[in-house]
Image (tube, rainbow, N blue to C red; front, side):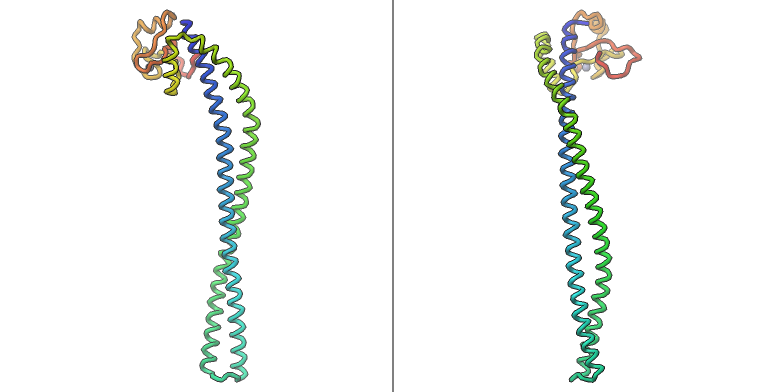
Length: 242
Ligand SMILES: [Zn+2]
């Protein structure tokens, strides 16, 4: 293999690992952020459930008061009617009927409301459990980050220190194309496979392939500009840049 190609490969190994480490650190940080956002959402959901339950309880108390008030009025009117102490029998009777109807209606409403209160209480308990689980998820994500990040950072610093030397080893004429390929987010090396560039499938002339294999000249793919690395034996399929 051509020495320049080896230099490209060695530099790429550093860059590839640095990319992976950056991605790893990013994923750890994102996991913490996402877990915190989920916990915040769970907290808001719990607050909403609490407010909902408080509102229902308020309605429950209002109905209790209404039932008590009209129940007393009903009982008093009935007593006066029984004792024959009303001035106007018809209107007293009407008042009694009204009180009975209001109390009945309020009692029916209260029964329905109590079902809602039960349901809201269950929803609140679920929201509390969800907040607790979300809190544990945050702790786990923070712990994972604390455990894994130092090694990621340490390795990154090592590679950072190593990279200038690898970059300097790169032949000058290959630096610009290498940087361009990196900028596109492409792996700068491609195998030749079945007579074509493995990355873009552009045909590689046989003479070029021979020169690549013999390590005589550095060739770049005419389709994508990647540095042609070597001919990959037919039975190999796995991603491997040597
Ligand atoms: Zn190509």
